[in-house]
Amino acid sequence: MSRAALLLGALAAPLVAALLGAALLIGASPSGWGYVLGALLTTVGLLTRRRRRWRGLTRAGLGLLVFVLGARVLLTERGALSVQRLPDGGTRLVNRLVDERDGTLLAAHALRLSGRLPRAEAQDFVPALESAFTRMREAEGPVATPAVATWLGMQRPEAFDAVLIPPESSEPTSTAVVFLHGYAGNFAVYCWQMSRAAHAISALTLCPSVGPEGRWKSPRGERTLAATYAWLVKQGIRRVYLGGLSNGGEGASVLVNRPVPAGLELRGLVLISGAETKEAPPRVPVLLVQGARDTMMPARLMREYARRAGRLATSVEVDSGHFAFLDHHAKCRSTIATWLHAREH
Image 1: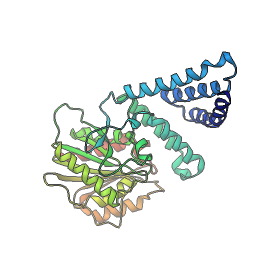
Image 2 (image 1 turned 90 degrees about the horizontal axis):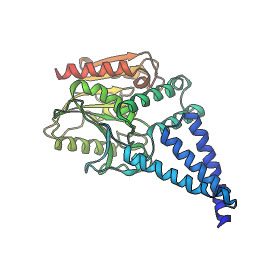
Image 3 (image 1 turned 45 degrees about the vertical axis):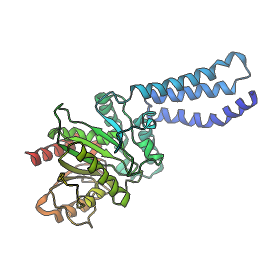
Image 4 (image 1 turned 90 degrees about the vertical axis):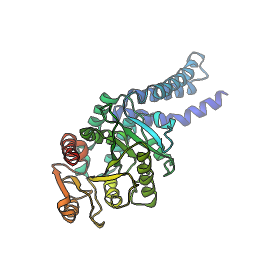
């Protein structure tokens, strides 16, 4: 038994060391540190099992891991934001187990350090993400994330996770904003930021999940959006605005011309840092929000889309790159809220 414990500890040690380094790099959340310390205690306990005075470390580490898991399950989603599996309205436990902030910041650092992000885009990306998560946590507390189930390959048009954020008013609403995520999957933080603008028209904000690549233009993406619309109709929604971020913006600019269910009126399109310029122009008013220095979705492409949309288009550029929705969040929120309010009133 001691040999098996020693072997298991030796195998776990490099992984735990990597987790410890990652936690220090990103400034992990309380639950993130709880997982790391629990794994560290468990590993040290396994490596020192032959020494009687250290044998309690394994139990202490496992106990801490169980405690953090339980706390995440019980304390997550105490605010208005929720992650539901549509169309049945269920939930996936895996979406509650980790803090979205930890995984997202770790991926952002990895992209930055690996050079996968253009240098001009990477400079402000991580600080803007950290600021966004701070604002969301202050408003909502611990939240679930659909990113976990997404990366586990669990999203299907017949059963997909969606972030739902109701309007601030307690009155029933008949208006919704559907916001399509970009590359890397659906993240609650982006949906929450969109909801701040949607509050201007007392709308429900709903952000469905399609997969890590954000392929909304695919048949799978089209079926997922159709299922989202159908679910909204059953909830009494009669007016909907379609929006998208980056890859989600490209998908939204294509899917906006698809039919919507009877009883549902598509009132407008909101594209943030992404549009498909080869698609037919929309038949509804469209708002384009774009970073003037975007190197991943150049502003000239968004300008071309706006030109083709003609009088239906309202285009706003901010002094930013591809992640304008994060590092110029106040300007973007104000712009979207004003446009939505004008459309409704």
